[in-house]
Amino acid sequence: MSAPMAASLRHGASSDIGRVREVQEDSLLVSPPLFAVADGMGGHSAGDVASRLALDVLSGDGPRDLNMLREAVVRANRAIYEKAGSSPGLSGMGTTITAMLAGDHTAGIAHVGDSRAYLLREGELQRLTEDHTVIERMVREGRLRAEDAAHHPQRSILERALGVDGDVEVDVSEIDLRAGDRILLCTDGLTGLVDEDEIREVLRSEEDPARASDRLVAAAVQAGGHDNVTAVVVYYAAGRPTVRETVTVPAVRRRSRRLLLTLVSLGLLIVAAGLGTRAALAGSFYVASHEGRIAVFRGIPGSVAGIELHRIERTTSLRVDSLPEYYRRQLADGIRARDETDAERIIRNLRSLEEPPPAPAVEPTQP
Ligand code: CA
View (spheres, rainbow, N blue to C red):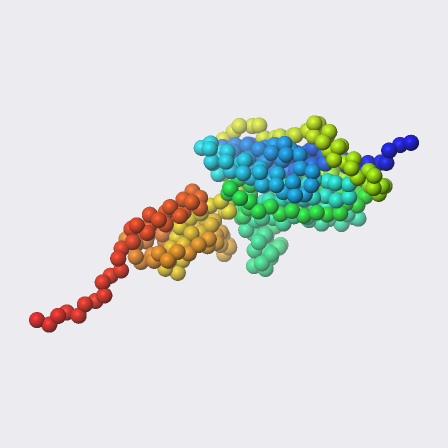
């Protein structure tokens, strides 16, 4: 007598450096039931170090539930942040991550950045993740139209990424899996060039997940390929019979599968590259004036197309007009800080420069 049929996951994964970039900064992880994509950023090939490190930590952790998956992403963030801080050539590196852990009847998603997860169910494509970009936030807040966001030149500016701060907020969600569900994890090199109608058509029509991932990546390269592009496709075939006694099986199966990790790390080309268009706003700080007082800002000064690229972290009691002229001028542009601690140090230094308020005007004494 045969054992109950196991839930069946079939997968495909493809990646391409694209036509323009000299470094492959995307990485992908295929280690059933764990799958992930990561899109690195940072100059001088630091981006590929960040994306590979994120997925190395993830696969090494071997999460078995959604909470463990979230914790693994938090650990990946910490690992990248510490490595960036200890290696001058890697400072400022970061990465997105979108990971899926499939169970028998559910899939957990953990996500930071602007890579995406999609679900094709009964012919309809749903997006499972939110982009952590300035532009998408503006759309959510009703300040920018979705159709203007899709091709906005600043759409890649991230508000959240791994490695830019010691802590990171991870979006986690869980979906029920149904027979026939098809899931796509991809970097923005795909979604920036291939629209959702085309993604849906490929996932809907292609019975082989490996061919689906190949076709999606090829479509992005054909459409211009101005970015690295990566797609991981997972097809969830017939579910197992809902027999309770089989429930303990997955843990054992997953442990043994961990021995068969197939970590596919990309991006071995070491070619110096510029910073590109991505910037991690969340990890940038500066000190400037706000309504006459000194404040710590997170992000970078200025705005893009009317969209502010910063927010106030903390306002102090220190008045700008109590400072020497030279510092007032500097504060008008904003004084960049390496991190939040550095911003506090700058404020302490400014405090020490504070000039006493002008003495109250004294009535001239009559001779
Ligand atoms: Ca990208």
